Image (cartoon, rainbow, N blue to C red; front, side, top):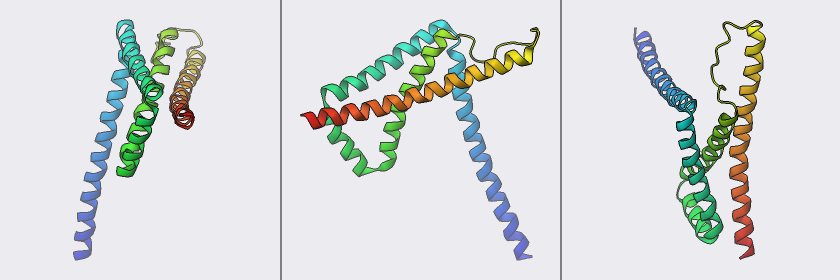
Length: 162
């Protein structure tokens, strides 16, 4: 009897744990979808571009103008907690990725969820569009990685040269 009670108790706790993480994943997905959908509006897209470009430029200027201070701050942060360092790298990566994606949305405004219902060869058009969307997201991720790597190399070059 105690064996079944323990199993039921564990099952209830695991179910609550899974529900909590599923809810968190759904909330994160809704935030991403809302931001991606906002980029279909041209005015919002230009606003996103301005904010992302200004933020990324601010990060670059801080690395170029104050390389030693940035290096000291980075050493303090990494000695303090690795999670904070990971968060900072994630923010810089996210700036580069979303900036690249927003630039692609200027070129391809109908990138997300077009309507192919009334087209002849709709499945072929959907397949082509899906491939294009996958490539845009891949290049956006590469843009974020390049942003981080170039910032790291610039930081290393500037602190080694001073």
